[in-house]
Image (cartoon, rainbow, N blue to C red):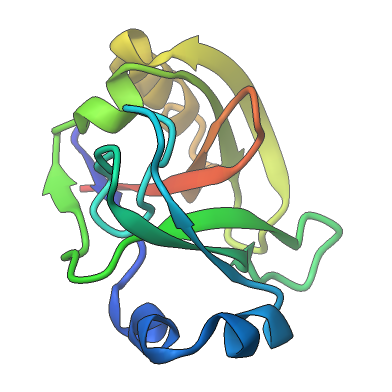
Length: 154
């Protein structure tokens, strides 16, 4: 089965990079500098920041549904990035991590979920989408629990 993975659109975050640290703090966000490789995953480009690169850490509502599965959590975004949007391609950022994948129906209710190494993501996507009730998937980085990307049928 063909699938489409998307990162978050960049536009809603653009203003954050113009704000002072104090203004970011008022929004419960903060500027951070990557101090290690593969520790700061940008949710727009689905790439990892290199040491020394600046990012914004903020709380983001990634599942704004009218069900008990409504959800928000901390994410990183990096300035100047373009939204990842590819069919049948898994970005390296996801490949190198343990992932939690959650399948939701059209109403935003959880129908199935599992954990998988990113190197084995495609078979889990196929299994979850084999259930006709599952409309879309959310991928989370399993250990910290943060939202990573959305998957739709392509």
